[in-house]
Amino acid sequence: MVGLGAALWPHWGPGGVAETPVPAGPEASPSPAAAPGPEVAAPLPTPPRDDEGLLLWVNRERGLPPDYVPPDLVPITGVPVTTQGMLLRRVALGPLRELVEAARAEGLEIVVSSAYRSYQTQVAVHSYWVRVLGEARAVRVSARPGHSEHQLGTTVDLTSPRVNYQLTEGFGDTPEGRWLEANAHRFGFVLSYPAGKEDITGYDYEPWHFRFVGVEVAAQVHRAGISLEEYFRSLYRP
Image 1: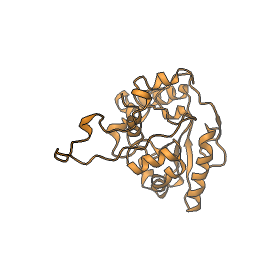
Image 2: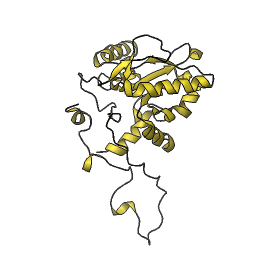
Image 3: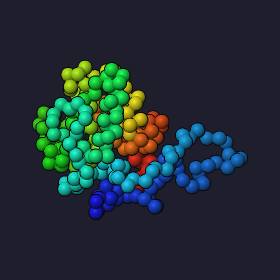
Image 4: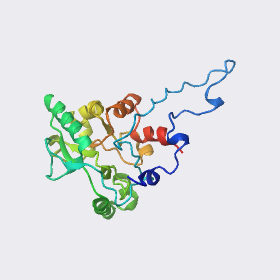
């Protein structure tokens, strides 16, 4: 991915990674004589090596080049899908199968509604929502081309028969939606746009949108009770 890092993260701090979101310098730790300040949350652990490119930061400001295509896309097999021929990176497909099987063992049915989208496909998707909702509303529910996590090839939209295979906020209140919120991290998936974080992520709540980042990072995000956007800011803050 020559040149991709520069396109995504033009403002890395020293060494490329800011290890914690807490302030640096003497003011971060009061002297013994100083009055105790407010309790500061424990910093996130240092991130693992990202040899597989799972931690690319894509949001409303940071985007992917139009010609970016993930290196190991494969057809989605072994899990229920709403449409045949969808693609996902190989590194995420095995964990997705394990997730779906674990849910099935508890009597739940999880179905993939959407996966990899090329830049060109996102042009069509976003243009549709602009026509239907107008630009101001569309950008809250649909990423602009180059700014969709789906282009990474590690993101899936999940649904179930309980919501007639639709992508709706009501999915979050179904047994499948609640199970995913509580368990997806065990398989390396994170809910990218959780409820209550809209002002941080820039997008409406999407209980169906899960991104594979690996078990270690997913567990960190889940334990901290933060959004993936907050996690990336802690790593790559300007």
